[in-house]
Image 1: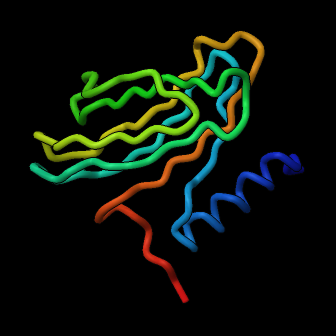
Image 2: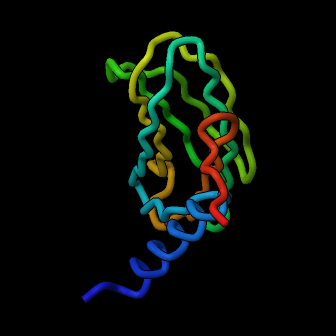
Length: 122
């Protein structure tokens, strides 16, 4: 049986992908959740992210290059933006890390910008 939270997250993801709004995910205390996105050489990786609920609204952003090396990292607050040119073509892993929290999960949303923004379907 699917949990209510799992069903709610699936519905939110479906609506977000369909209408081009942020996709939200719950990041457990001490946990990490990742998105995978393919980029071409010299393309700009750009997205907004928001911590909608949880603790101090802080989250660590870690981005890994296709070679699994750390491409970028920073600690963000409630609202933040990331923008950087990609040097190597491939699939990048965009992770939200909640290791600094022992007890509080965080609800984090990501909104891809530029050519990676989902198209709105009518």
